[in-house]
Each structure stands twice: as C-alpha cells, then as structure tokens.
Amino acid sequence: MNLKQITQKDQLDLKKIYFDSIISIDEKIYTSEQKRAWASQAWDNKYFNLSLKEGKGWLINEREKIIAFASRYPNNRISLLYCRGDSQRKGYGTKLLQKIEKEAIKEGLPCLTTEASLISYKLFLKNSWKIIRKEKIIIKNITFERYKMIKNF
Image (tube, rainbow, N blue to C red; front, side):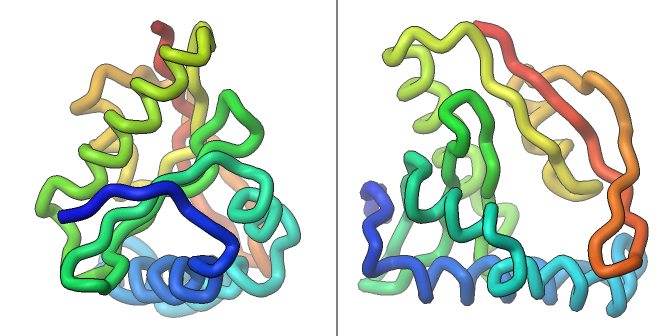
C-alpha cells in the first residue's frame, strides 16, 4: 500500500473511484435512483472539481492502481473520502482519515468538519468524531440523509 498526495493527473481516476464507490452501495441503504444522482456529482458539481483541484488530498494505491482517496476543501472540511467498492472495509478509509487529521493538527487547525453519508458516518464515529446533526439535502430532485460531523483537536 502506497500513500501519496493527489495531483492534477489523478483527477479522472479519482472520479472513477467515486463513481464505483457509490454504485457499489447496497440498495437497502441507497436506492438506484439515489446512487445515480449522487454519482453524477463527479461531473455535474463544480465543488467536486474544486475539491480535487484546490483541496489538499491523499490517495492510496496498490500495484499501480488507485483504490481510495480523501480531500480537504476548504481547508477545515473533509469534502471527499471514497474507496473502490471491492476495497471497502479493509482499513483504507481509516488510514486516509488519520493522515488528514494528522496533517490538520500539524497545520494548527482547531477542528475538522464533514458531511458523512449513511455509510461513512460509522467510520468517523470510530475515529472519535461527533455528530452535530442529521440533515437532509436534495441532489437532482432526490432527497438524501446525511450527518454533519466535527472533530475537535
């Protein structure tokens, strides 16, 4: 496993991971319509691209294949944390989260925030994050629930 900073040339591969991660979610958690709307954000949402271009991010690759990534944008917010469907629940998300937290502490940030999905919020809770509130958002006229979360340092 190799951890490295995200570069401009990684962007298309990261979009593919994002898409794969979302599409592989069990339909008992998110419907196929929700997954399609959510996955489309890699191409339709300007903040997604800003997060990759202007954010501070890390990726994990194995045997020249990128399998997971995370990004902070703006600086005090984890905006993206995704892993390929076939590589989930193997500790990659935890490694990325810990790397981003260490980096934020080193930079003197007092806290990090995020909006976690119904799947990822458990990872954040295991790493001492706190739920601020459950919230609903709309993407392409489809409602989603997620958790606004924080970790103070």
